Image (cartoon, rainbow, N blue to C red; front, side, top):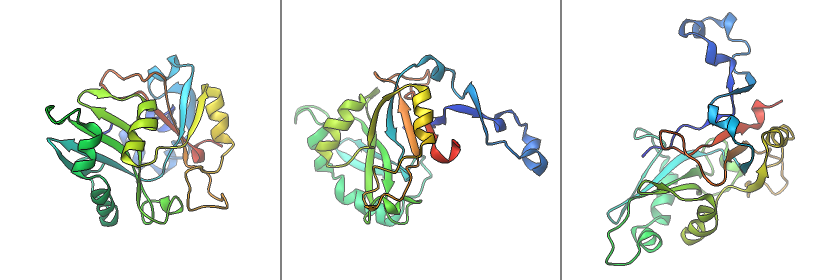
Length: 229
């Protein structure tokens, strides 16, 4: 399963442009501006309190565990993984490790598991300030048709796998999230930035307990610091 597309909180001016307008430079000014109050997904307007994490600037990774074997992929089936990141993933997420974490016992068939996260490190987007070495930040786990709750991913699965999860900022209202992003806090994930010179990329927000869209994907939105002035 590919990870569902994550929308920003609000629609942009460009949502209302027809296809021909995309090729007219005179009509492009302001097309990326948000339209406050006009939610990109109507579900967002019904949720009053959100769990907020730091958004990691990396490359989307899927770690797929089927029938006792581990394979790796990007956000889509056609995505290409950087060689140094793939080597790290292969050394870290072995068949035996995932068998230990996700198999109930030897008599049980191996479950279908997909780990979703961000690959980061040197030469991976702008994520070189996160770490001097490639790494993987886990943000979701799906077993069969079930999405695990974030507390389980954050405190149990990540510890068993020996990987990190995005820094957690707590619960916030929509207004608090917008102000938090406007304040442009420094990244808490930037382990290779001891002087705290890099502003976080943004936040990822989801309800608690988890909720799903009608297509089965988790309800979640992103908001980037560069998008909020």
